[in-house]
Length: 512
Picture 1 (spheres, rainbow, N blue to C red):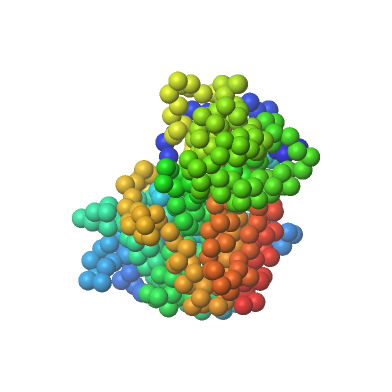
Picture 2 (picture 1 turned 90 degrees about the vertical axis):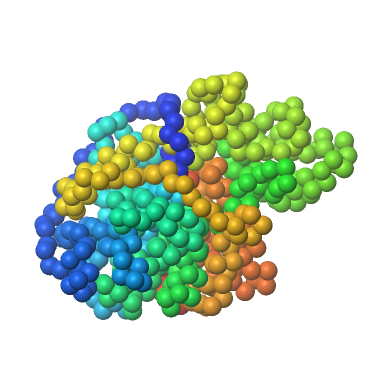
């Protein structure tokens, strides 16, 4: 039987949450030695004088091995080509001590999505040396919220640099600069790419093996950066880790003129119908894969027929969709065979007056307005924002010794320019394809949750199935799956499996 769960992220509105849980006392965060170190970072004096940095020393034990590391938290100031202030980028970097030759130690740049999310989610949920304390299967404890040692930290594999794009975290535009210079697809690639270039320069890491790790829209950014960094700065990557992926936004946008997403969401519906006991099958994975096969064959063909579908064929589709989704045949017929994620969230448990979460469909909440459903209400979101906000605001001051009176923007509501790429849908598949063709050593790890209704796993599969019609690149892409939602790592067993998968991926990517 699969576990009950967790989740969240991206950039949508807060919502009230209701979920039955058994409360147990949280454990306290372990004490960590942290001493201020005023030694200057290795970059020129004029640039250093404008940065605000705190450097501290720590240690962590991973798999029985003690690792000493240095944490650098602060703002890196960026200027334009004319030397005028452009932006102040907040980042947190962890580097293993004592330092080795750059070529012997990888460095991974990490960011979240939104657009508008700070890196705190991956930083303190999954990858960094300390993490938010959650119950085994992802539910938060009651406040006060605390950090604990993350025994699945990636520091045994790589040095880490967590980046907050401008408008998130403590990162801000320089005085006189406008938000639209940063808040858009191309603008974001320019500024985050320039930050990476500048970090490699100031901290003398050009010879290090280089990785990116992104979540949600952060995967969109990572795919775009893969070619942007190569073509603009000559920075070639060893690997990219994509968590809860979206590269082609057409796959997530069902509409009258776009039937494809209805098929791509169906396997996730099947997983959730099983979880909520609206469908029955002896084996979860077999049932979900059967739904995926049906979706990409008979179902998508039936949708393509439109009004020319015969009554007999339509009835057969209704029966199959009812089997895989747990939605009543009458509602499916009323929806003209097209079940969007909002429709599914609203109707799966309507007999209990519950809706299910977007970021994790296993989490349920009471329907606050049955007559007028608000599709931005997500019971799998609002519980986690105060957890991450409280823990990071304490951690950055108490452990990293960084002080700022600015609001730390955990999840900012940015006015984002998505641009006009490829028939009106943002699609970064071509950018990743280009980078992989130009850089034959670049490898990609793709991590998906079965119960994620924000970035469904079949949409990710479809995207990578179409990455390269000649099949030259697929051998360099590894796809993994987890019994969890959008925030794969909130679930304890999934967090451990993710670390195992990432460890194997780094080993393969570093072999070339």
